[in-house]
Image: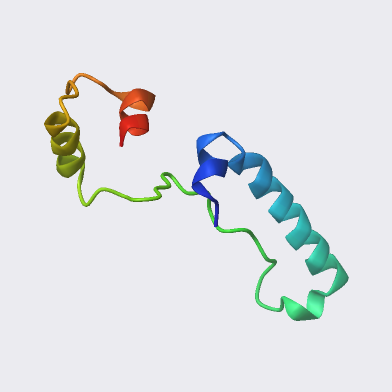
Length: 81
């Protein structure tokens, strides 16, 4: 599990690699604990939200109600949401 901050600021990939190293070390030290397969960290999330919108349409409508142009995209829109 990654925090929204780690994903937002680009720390997710290094944290994921560090977790993989820790799990590999644990497997090497105690192979009897991992009999089915070597442990691996969960896949990286594609999006992380503190308060996710119910739908993309709802997110667009809420920014429009605030008087924000619908032409905003990318990081500016994510910042406003």
